[in-house]
Length: 486
Image (tube, rainbow, N blue to C red):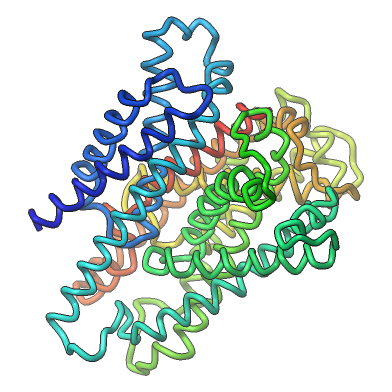
């Protein structure tokens, strides 16, 4: 293990040094090439020392790497360096916008390679250990499924889920005539060709999602959050970086260019949410049909009782979240707009509709996030992640459609809906916290029977998973990007 960490440290220092050199070439960077390269190497070494033992797969490595890079961006260019150079007087928003190119560079040139390298190394070591302990001819995954079939499941289910996400994303492409732009990748000007390229890319990204996150997905709820994180990552890697490169255009990481692609950011978020949800359902169906075949496997409670409990606890938990959210809605005067969903106009009607929607979302939270929270902090994090996902899905997407308009994936709409973003986060945190209380009380009752204790513990997500890094990436980028690009 010590040798492995030493080797990972050297590789991470090398990758970090290259990343630091690339960051020095960003126009907004104020560091010299040698200093930035040295800092990058130190960043890589620190990443291994702090996080290598927490990484168990390539997907978890990617998420830890992106979270680490995001924290570095907050601490160094927009924090420490701005303070030392006397630029902090610009204000936090202007400072973040000025250093937005470095955010892209930190994520793609530091977090991405460091995370993937660590994940590949840890995964290869795990597979080698498994082969040494078991048969040298057949390697099996955690479910007992052969590795080649596990690969097939990830690619097939992920690819189909990616197509569904790509269908939702195609709404923005059609509105902005972006299919013609995408067709330029294959030197064509046809929108039909662009549509085919779009769906091909969506399927490939979906298949890669299955390969990266199959080990980390435990429920549809967590899969939604992983999908949202992966969608946001691909916004940086795709339209901001790979697309202009493939179109033989200069790569522009300025916040003005990012703001011009804000609609694509929301599209990538919606794509990721649907990708994660459909992948979780498809993966569970695959496992149920082809892997789990033990007729004697008994659960502590029947699936009907478990579903009813989840719906009940989610509905009750959402009442507190909905009431807290309504304070912001009253302050911003948007309740009459909500009432328009039932052709009403009074704030009271809007409040009733708002609570009804809150209960429905809370019930869906109960179904999607059962057994995901081992403690209070994680329950609030999962709730906030789900609240953020509904900010993408709700006021920016479904609300305009229900009112007979097109989805408003623009910076202007995001500016107006920033108070709603705060409300969704508060709603999610309160809902997740109360749901965790109900679930933990019921679990404590089940654990009185020692025969059920091991099974209950196995169903709940253990601490130490990449869930904290997931929260950092999605909540950090999901809150910062609408503010900086708006």
